[in-house]
Image 1 (cartoon, helix red, strand yellow):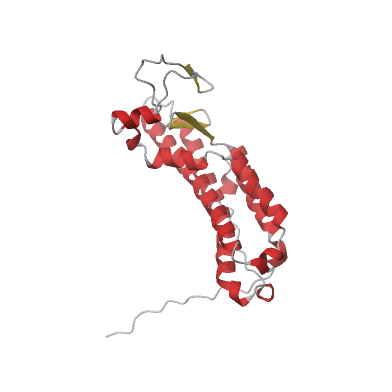
Image 2 (cartoon, rainbow, N blue to C red):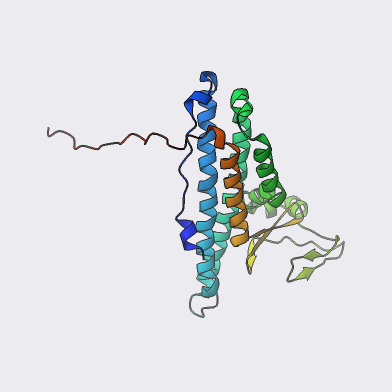
Length: 238
């Protein structure tokens, strides 16, 4: 468990005002906020992984194994959703950047595209796996939805540790969310979807965050003014 990484969090970047056109200020602020959010979602993955790892050996506890198994599955789902939100945040950056032509001309667009491509290449499943989690009960809501999301009469379902096949006339197999080793797996529209809950996944997310900072390095203020201090005072006595 990488405890130190769980507690590392970058500050939200501040863009140099002299490089932002007034008409682009609002959208530029949104981009900076989302670059900060990328790191927050990566950290959320690491935090979820910490709980995931903590529960792993507890699964074999004779007295509390069932509890640790449920907790580990919850942690895996949280990790997966953090990856989903990470991907949606990248989409938000692109959407706002499309409204900032001057800002775009001052950043390393090649590095930004490389970071986005790395995410899509590594986590191409991120939308489907979110649907599987968000609509878990709906997969078996009716016989029609069961048929839509189950697999039958196709190539065997290869889970890595188990291979399952069903005849064409069988009712089919609908695999629900589960964990095996470091792998979270589920099913959506007849497709088995997997996500590795391990340090390799966390490092890729961190690498993408670093690439986004590099892409926007020319417009990031290295010495931003400190945020204003908020002072709370007691309400006056009546």
